Amino acid sequence: MDVGIGLPAAIPGVSGASAIKWAQKAETGPFASVGLVDRLVYPNFEPLITLAAVAGAAQRIRLATTVRLAPLTNPGMLANQAASLDALSRGRLTLGLGVSGREEDYLAAPAPFKTHGRGFDEQLETMKRICAGGPAGENAGAIGASPVRDGGPVLLIGANSPRAMARVGKWGDGFIAGGGGPDMAKQSYDAARQSWKDAGREGEPRLAAGAYFALDDDAKSRGAENIMHYYGEPFGPMISEGLPDSVDAVKELISGFSDAGCDELILWPTVTDLDQVERLTELI
Image (cartoon, rainbow, N blue to C red; front, side, top):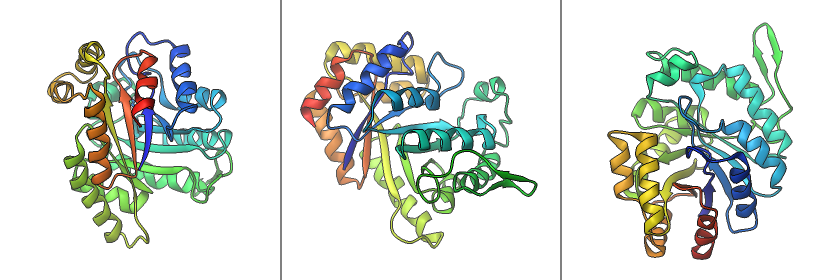
């Protein structure tokens, strides 16, 4: 199983320079990728723009959105941005896409909230065609840079319902789980594989996950506050109470996801301290 590390770009008060330093430190370590979570109505950095900056500062490590809230952006523009970033980074982009359940994000975009699931389906169809080098529509030509990889950037779908999971087999290259532990991920992986099979796809979907960490008691205390600030009720307490804060706890978490069948686990930070990268490096 590959292990990636999240960037602290969604922690209030973090500087752009700090996020870049995290990526550069991760580049020298054992990490396969750097990843970012996404909200619109929040003091965080936009994921694709941040990863574009990282692409110039780090030459090896893969770049992942975990996940980008797709329905908030026009599909043609989002496909163009993704294709451009993938080309500029020499094929290092993993495009994780999902939806937001926060109505305020849609009001701020603005974008339809009540029909965002159906809109996401239509968006995925359009984006897959564009990112593969096809036309944007019946009366529009190709958009963006030529694909580095056949089919465009690796596309992971975030999903937590049967209808949403069907998108994995229909449009995705894989699935990304987030917010739960290894046991929950394993159940989702079984559903993702079934979606893949139902769609008549060959091979296996790529199975990824994201989970939070905070190495040491002080980091856990501050990290729990940041998680509560980001998620609120009811998810904040659920995530912060189970936050792994020791070497053994993080090792157990990594082992649990590996046993669940995860292909890549991205460990999201909860504080901005650069030594969290060094501590995580030592235990992988």
